Length: 64
Ligand SMILES: [Zn+2]
Ligand SMILES: [Zn+2]
Image (cartoon, rainbow, N blue to C red; front, side):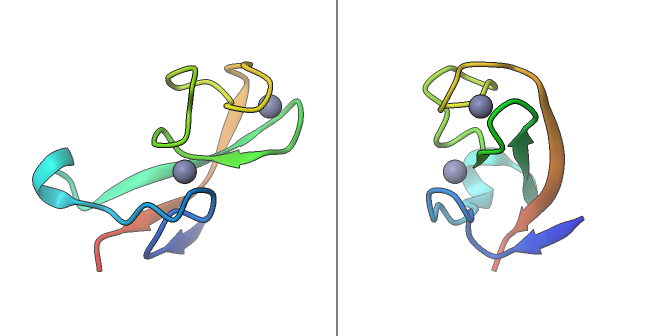
């Protein structure tokens, strides 16, 4: 797994007070290959590009 200090897809940093955790997951869509997190999803947990919820977890974004 990779780790980032900001989302690699939408550059959202982790805000611990909002999420109550020390990281959030970054996913990659198995269908179109798009990397995304829940911040950039127009479809909730599904891929913002094609709308499929067929993804694998590729890394985490940690609080700075
Ligand atoms: Zn994102
Ligand atoms: Zn997709």
